[in-house]
Image 1: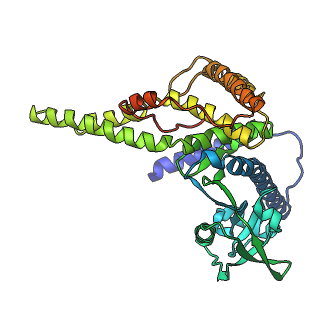
Image 2: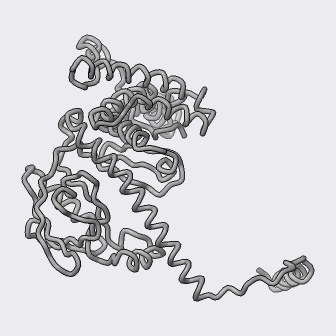
Length: 382
């Protein structure tokens, strides 16, 4: 800013400050030290709330992942039921509060143990510091959580018991955990105020906004089961395949245009990929709703009121009642879920296995010649 302009700007600020009307009462003096203490307290409360929601989510997810192992086919692995963290998993602004409240540092610490999980049954507790895993030291630091997660997966690969050496109240103790067989798709909570969730073929992610919206364990189970169905039915792999096919078709047009002297800059390749990736998006959302209810039922959750979730969604987002782009409308989802509930209840009454109904062999052969279904988009339309 040039000097004359800067001087005029300063003059304007001064005139505004001296001419604007201010408060009429004498407000209390705010001490900086008191404010800093309250800031720390509020940060601790935020972390407490986040851990509470993590526990709420994992309590439900644990039952879904274990109960639905038979539907995940080859996508299963050893499940222990713990979440871990170090101070490096938090941003700098939040580390001090976590260090103060939870004694969190460089070492890998158990942040929560899912109720009813193998870890809880064995005796692991939140706050335990992980020292050794099958006699191998647990390394802390920035990569500590990641390395522990990878090593735990290797340790549980053969399904045999795993020895955890933990430090609790300054004393070390060894605890043996017998892992359960479960769907191998970890469930995570993401700090995002949007009411949504998504699957990425390896994980299930639920937004904080969705957690705040859901009123019961059954609603959490409905959302987690829906995302689990996307992963177990390989919808993301289908999208990648479709995108590749679409890109190749578009490439042929780009090449043909180039021979004609037109430079398309690969526009048709990108367009083809995007169009093909969206093929059967609605149908796959419907399948995730359908298969998801089987996951819910296998986990022991009540499904008779599952459809009402979509009535609540409709009141929160009225556009979803008539909007039908990448997702079915909420009325369609409601009716389809009601029909699925009756199907599952009939199977239970008849003592039949709780397995989704597959297409006939002829129908599957016919669909194999059509573009594969698309990947899962987020739980709700964007």
